[in-house]
Amino acid sequence: MATSRTKRRFLDEDEDDEGPPSPPTPPPQLPSALKGINPAIPKPWSYKPSISQQSISERLFSFPDLQLVHPGRIDRLNPESQATLGSHDFFDGFRVQANTSFPDTVQAPPRLNTETTLHFGSQQQQQQQGGEPPVSWNCQFAASPNRLYLARVTSDGSLTGKLFSAYPIGNTANLSVIVGGEHNSQETHATASFEYDDSESSCQFTWRNPNYFELGYLQSITNKLSLGFAGFYMDKNQAGGFSLGSRYADPQAGRVITGQLGAGGLNGTFTFTQEIPTRGGNPRTSASTELTWGINPQTQAPESKWAAGLSTEFSNVRWMGNYNSAGNFRMLYEEGLNPNTKFQLCGDINHATGQYLFGIGLHFNYEIRSPNFESELQQIRQREDMFRRRQSTPSLD
Image (cartoon, rainbow, N blue to C red; front, side, top):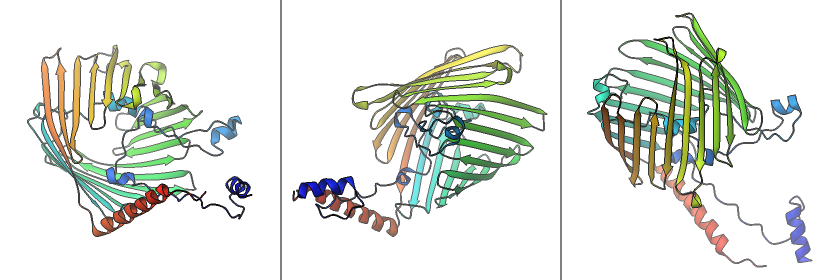
């Protein structure tokens, strides 16, 4: 009879029946806020889709088992390939970065992050090729879970400020408003963006003075395929453009394929990212390729470019390298010396032009915790210890 009551208790939780006590509820895990405000770039092997309920495509096409996922953004169709083929992680010269965070609580904001960067000996700065300024200071302040302030000041006189505000719509949708401005030695402009996201689609509208407009939309068609479009218009030059985009993501196979085609097919981009399976999933390795084609604005002749890269991540080491059709070979080696210090080594070699750039960097992370943070963290650890003790206690059955 005791066994029958136990089975009936687990089959019907609403029935009030005596039986063995249910297992204790595990304590909440430490939030990702401890690792910083900006989320990490998504990867095929860590992509966790969210299932929508009664989505637009389900109502239109009557496919109740689509299980659509959030597609991302049309202007960032393949962040997985950009993590390997992009140039934002590469630098030359000597760079030191110090990131300091001031968390007040463990579970939620307010939270203040500051980052100071010293960058010297860069040939890109001397050649004015868009390199980083010698000194820069960034500040991020999360006033609430739905509001974030950002400020950036550099040694070349550039000043940037942004305000991010999020407004929930129902249980599955969210509207974000981004207002900002930038001032430098050449121009001063303001920007305003409106972003709408739900469980199956995303839409963005951006305005930037003087009279620049941009619109993008991406919709999940199946649980792996998303389709969308993007367009822009510049009143100053009386010019505009329109493109169609698609994204195919298979998390189980670790594969992401994207394509973007401009009006008339004269320009476009194709990317392919594939996770390389390894024993035990360590290291995490992925390969990416990218092909772009279009019309050269100077010669008005068609041209194409390609790039290929490989990225490998161990527990505390990251290696990344890529090569493109212009003859550039880039390499990045990053190793965590301890939980708060990272060492970086970069190289950029172009055999066609005979240019060789190398960089060495150190990245420090500091966390200054308030008394509220320490007391809350201690309570979480006490709940974790209590949960482990309950799990180790033998059952009475």
